[in-house]
Image (cartoon, rainbow, N blue to C red; front, side, top):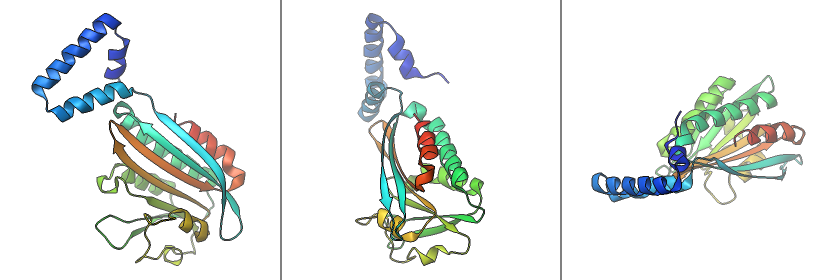
Length: 223
């Protein structure tokens, strides 16, 4: 797919400056000021996906020390559609690499206008996980909200570890407190929001320490 930002940047400086000035004048004439600001910010932002990755030990209530990966991604508009698909694919591949035969995936979040959380058993299939994850990344109501994902054994209901009435992923110390005490086989927390021209995605993964190299390699493939 052609990237108009890269095309603008590849033009020689004298002609590029003229083309930019002409474009700004045209936008001022035909577009609202907010659109001009968004266009200019997007042009300055560029088309590369930027990321920061931190990792650290994650002790649990049961005494096991897992590994926590905290990934923040800054995605420009031209890369958004393809990036959402790639991120979903990476999450499914992580789940596949950590999978046990009786894994069941669950999620929990709270919308700002509701006092109670939304608690959903996603199911045991990787396809179900991928479909739900992709939906969360594009559901406007979840912009700026924290979604917690827990992988439990089939015989353990989500209500056993998440209070379906009082739990709030946005509370102080969350979602780390829930993940530490849930006894999940592995867990995630996700959030996304628009900041200026960028889509900012944060992904926290808590996984067994003996799988950290595989997970880190998959996360590194996103940039």
